[in-house]
Length: 298
Image (cartoon, rainbow, N blue to C red):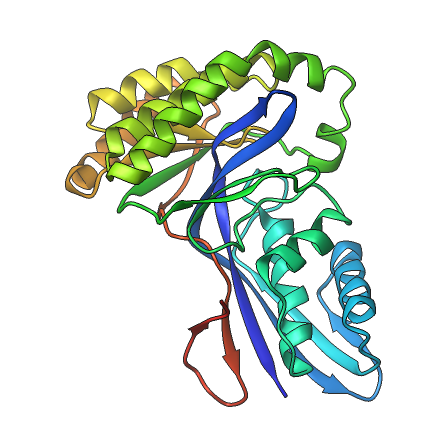
């Protein structure tokens, strides 16, 4: 059966670091997607997919003990190397589309296990907003659903390879040094999500962004924070191992987004505006057979 699965990307993370030496991130899913279409064929063939997707195909087939062959096609709205969970979206959508095309379904935890065996992974395929260990998968906790919010995505330039970034020799020590700030950031974000308080979420995300400067410096971050707050944003978040910065706007302040971006462009050389997106709950959606309707996978 022909199946298409789409996975959301992210605008970085709401927070990321370590607590008591354990890695974690808080997901920041957005309404940009990777879509993977799979249908049975005589010989497994793929169009427009790389090594990570081929690995996801092979590992899913092995895990589910499937011997069928498939045609696989990937379409993505997500740029690579920016910290927008492009690989995590590609891999998770691939795993689930292979499973569904064979009459099976993978749980989020099963997808996480496969994805983590390939590379460090964002938890955007879990429903809602989650606290997730992106390195070993030891932490997998739902924090609730997304609060209505818009994010203006800015790019400070360059590309970051997530795999190499997480292999840095100094990363453990640098994460340890910011644990108190990260713990406070996490507490604020969790409280914000549970009480629907965007100001707390924004405060926590901003704290985590600033704490990450000694690990991966973002030029003009403090200027962007100051300008954003002056235009009614609740704060900023970042890709802790990428190049994007998100300006977090409540829906009733969205009309201030354009002048805010214009002021940032005037004062922050080389910072590029990408687009405005919605903050959404994570999770995978599917289309099966000839249906054009998207339904939740779990």
